[in-house]
Image 1 (cartoon, helix red, strand yellow):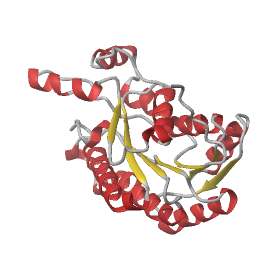
Image 2 (cartoon, rainbow, N blue to C red):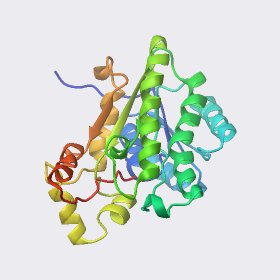
Image 3 (cartoon, helix red, strand yellow):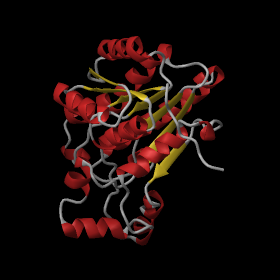
Length: 272
């Protein structure tokens, strides 16, 4: 059976959809004919993303909003729905991160990441709810291995992403009766992102060490995540909800092995 992933006539809203993994997802939906809305807090990123997405065909709209601003997020959804109608697919992927040991981290540093990743995700899902197609909407939270794999220098991200995965589970329970499916994608080391270059593999030595701890012995691509998002939003995933799905070449499984052996290992940081 050939998969039909045609999204013509469907409205896809991607928060954080102007760069990295989230922009890759936006490109995939645009290629499949969806009407795509992307949102980000930086006007220049929104404008550039819209220009590039428009070249792929279909309708594109961009809005500026910071996920930490509950009212601004609400206005972004109202504007998007005015343009393209109810939302068929929502991708929530805004994120922030940096490396720091907990003993050296300020309260503000911890709070910033939690506010963007966790509180921001709640803002997006809560404000989207009135505008989601019922039944039939697919919601995807882009999380990270930190949600279930403890990592050094990542106490803020681990706490925030664990919370996002619990948002996925709870809202899958609460909204499932209205025909809304909610799932999490947890990307592993994905090439072509700023986080990969800066946090995970800034040198060839670190790149080789990181690849050695992925069972498939290679890094993922933007298309790997985008294809999973397409599948989860398609009729072929119609009975999948509340799932937390790693797309990491088996990295999350491998990451526990060195700890059991008493050896160090390269953190498989999620990248945006």
